[in-house]
Image (cartoon, rainbow, N blue to C red):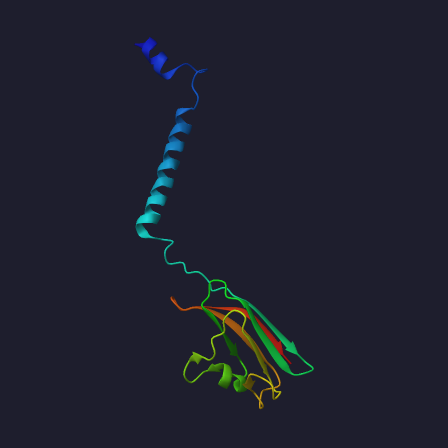
Length: 153
C-alpha cells in the first residue's frame, strides 16, 4: 500500500506544491469567483453614470469688457449651456425662476457676452464681477457637468 501512496503523492523531491499552499490557492480562487459572480448577479457596476464632456473655451477681454464663449467640440454631450452667478447675466443665460437654461450651444457656436452694444445678450446693467460657467449636458439621463468657467473682474 505504501508503494501506491508513494507513486500517487510522490516523495519530498517530487511534490510541486505543499498541501497548505494548495488549500490557500483553492480558497483564493473560490473567493475571486464568488466576487465576480456576485458582481454580475447584483449588477454592482451598472449604476455608475458617465460624466458629460465637451470642449469649451471662455475668454474675458478686459479692453472691450466682453466674454467670448466658443464650443469647440461636444464630446459625449448633446449640447452646452451657460450659467452665471451674476444676477443680470442670469436673466439671459439662466432663468432661475423657471429653473431652466437658455440657449443650447453646439459645436462651432460662439457667443459674446458683455456690456457693449454688439453682444449677443444684452447685459447693459451687468455686475462688475462674476463667473460664467459652461455646462455640458447629456439629455438622455440628465447628466450635467461643468466643463469650463471664467471669472471677470
